[in-house]
Length: 218
Figure 1 (cartoon, one colour):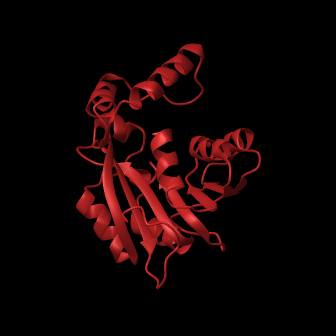
Figure 2 (cartoon, rainbow, N blue to C red; figure 1 turned 120 degrees about the vertical axis):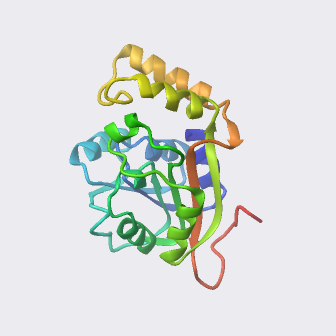
């Protein structure tokens, strides 16, 4: 998904990027490696922010509960990847995300039947493309594009296999074999077919007069 993210963000020609629910900093690190971005990350977990600080020392980081608060600043792009499905009050979170966006919002979440392994790691809902579009439009965003990612190696293959793992997918620190597995998954996922899969992406922009650079649908 790293390459897919980089292609999407680079097409927008943005500079200031905020990652909501940045976790341990994978997405921010990918953008930092590319260069040319002013990066900010927020997360409710102080432990996650400490991990991100090690990986992306030049990023600005803040602790934030996206259901209840927002930063006072605005950013060219606000992205929130694989976070929304964990949030009880998703509409409040989306309003706060939109309020921090100067131009674009990029969301990724999960669609399809919720698996028991996903409930085990804190998912409270999955989304359909229609539902995600409707919620983004309700908060005043113009949806530019909704698409899937991950077929066939993430979904259905990996997503189905994790059903048989007690406690859901592995989490926390990983050892040498875990790193090898992550490396293999990274290269296998590069073979996923574009535009299909259970990872659901939505790209939207603020409803304003004027343009903010390149529209990826043009």
